[in-house]
Length: 199
Length: 272
Image (cartoon, rainbow over all chains, first blue to last red):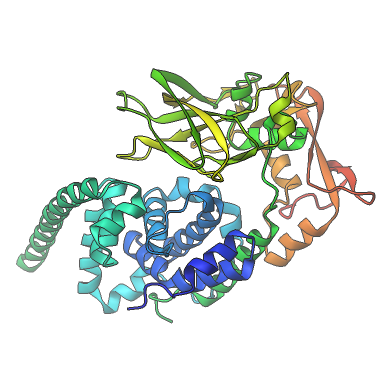
């Protein structure tokens, strides 16, 4: 899995020196991972696009305080996308006019279109999303980094600006809560299905 | 087309915006707030409301109100350093930071803003070489890091605060007035003009138009910003009708730069 290209630290340094093409290269490198994460956190494609745009605009606005993890800004992007997705209206307000002016493909895609062919997959994705949304934002970011993006707790701790110990403690608690939430959601879904069948 | 790929049309436009944003960001860092021109000063007021508050000039409705908690921590360091703020008092939401330059240098706050001092700033007898920021607390973090060059010295005073957002005012016409905050934008937005001597309000809609409105395309947005002109809009009392001055938007400078009133533009706003 390509997590970062070797040139990322140098490219990021050039971007910080107002090199637009270098910043675009960072965007090219990470946009899909950020978008996939945003899809996981939001209910539809449009919101995920908005979160992706806001995340990269935030990367520039907050460039002085970005925490690199092993030379990559991706973990910071995942944490930021988590926060923006959790607080969609507020997070996007800063960029609302800008993002609204961005053109989109005409065949407007929605999560429902996809769901028709992938009901079970979408059901699991919805459970994950609901379980994530029940966690505090830093915990949701921790789970995202360690479970979905395969970072170690120590690396996730750097991205979040907390100690390794604190990350492990929070992670243990968040995993337990997440598992409980998913079990509850799965049970609720099964109950719904049983009721449907018994009708 | 699959939902697992970012819409290529959207991605291409976003990429173009990112390149333009990065290349248009001035490299010159902001200096002392008291040195900023009236437009920029007011611009900062528009965004946060905290600048004028820090200067003790103007506390418009909707601005954050900070209540100090506990005792201040003061530390003096040379080069980049992390200061331990001590245990966080109950109710603390933010930390108020005041940085004093002891030597020339550029000092970066955790929230991305920075302050630059030169030797003239340090010898100025009337204004201390200080800058203040209020930074939200992150979970589990009770430290503040200031980044600077290895030989630059500074003193930081840090104080935990409880920050609450005050409500906007409502005038006789039912318009809200104050500063933009997490609740959105009021109908009348607080500004400061005349080097900070006059406080008033501009219509949010007029400000939006004069700032370029809501462009329908990137080409429109770029064409708007390429015009070397400033646009002025009226500044009102909080009643929204009494005009007390004008507010100028735009960074146009040089012999060909001109300032025109928004009312003189046939297409002041893309939406009109």
